[in-house]
Length: 240
Length: 339
Image 1 (cartoon, one colour):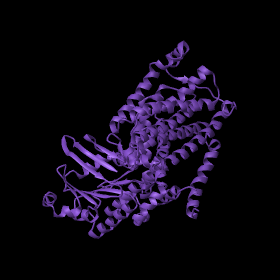
Image 2 (tube, chains in turn orange, red):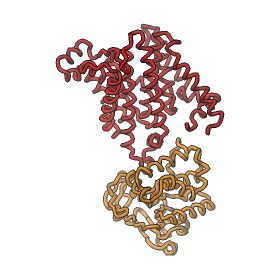
Image 3 (cartoon, helix red, strand yellow):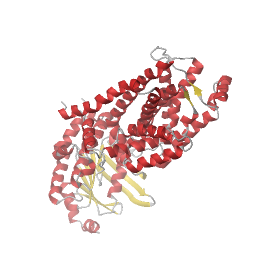
Image 4 (cartoon, helix red, strand yellow):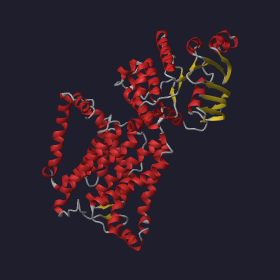
């Protein structure tokens, strides 16, 4: 579904990603694990089109989207819940969702998926029923965990086939992390693939079908999460 | 079904407002009725500007161009096509300002923040200079050039027929007042719908954070352009009404100082509240009228009055009124979803 091949990305003068390659298959949860500053967010931003590639290629559903604008990628079925959640503070939760629902209907993606933007929203509510009770609250007045739920629900309302989640568990209490892990599994069962950037290997191994470890902008490990836990090089890189 | 409080709030606000609107020609002196009409027209222009400014977060210093275009287009039409219908004058004015806004907006929305403001100012001043220097008038041949030399860029607009009726001079303003009221109500309704539609929410999302807007699939530049063009529609509408009310249009209405007045009135009322620009426009026209009593120190007096209003209402008129519990409650009930 997603093929990222040999991408090089810069942030200003700094060369962050060095020929990074990864892939995500249909209905698969893939985790990109690395410590802070390893290049996880840069990878996600590059895939989403928020950062330009210096070289390399990104193919999504067989289409080369390397030069495609970020909003077009979203309309082609890439949902993104960033680390800071990206909730619009002056809009209510309902309005945050309304924009995605409307864009989903306008993009025609929902026709392919044979459901409407409202159906997509209902699917999001089935994953996070708590969001339904927050619809009249402004984004500004949400807690950290609520913001993360709304961010994922909003991304799901776009009716994506791939969800990019950046540090979805960061700052959450352990009990809430379990709640989010259940949610991710539920999303996967809906047929949505997930690429997660995560700094905690233990959390990532609970959820991932496959795992990539990243350090200094390069993939240093790719394979089964359990293998990663046994790999000394990976553990050393993650501990810093 | 609405609860009784919502219905009561709407009756409390809309019935007196409706009664006042209908009875104003009888209640006000002819002079005050004209001032009241100016305030309504200025409100439409401020509401239109606020779609770009308050809702989308782009400060335009060139919206006077679309206001002026709305009146000039009809004035040229009357002069060179001898058309006396207000409806044709009005539609041509709106169409011209819309096309102008679409063209200039297409280029301006490529920039943001201060660069956007500078671009709009530059385009606005180029458009203004085309009238001040007479370049536009030259396009209409010797007669056009003669018009420029006689009026120094100003153009006369006669009393036009409204729905085919030719009104006597003393009947015209009261009759035209209802046209302005209709245009005002239609503008408020349409802009309210736009502001509360998903498109309007998307514009607010763009204002709050452009990057976030992009990754949820909003085509930011395209939507900015749409907002700019729609804004031009309402500025043209206001300009066309102004031209007919004033019976003339001058390059002064194209100048950036007029754009600044629109921005000032909008900020005065409050850019984050839908009704803010309307309050701002009315207060601005009112203050201008008060300051106008001092023939020599008019601008000084206007400046002092504006300072006073800004100090007393630091959150904008709408924002400060929103702090008054009774008004806030009525406002919230009014905002509940209609139908």
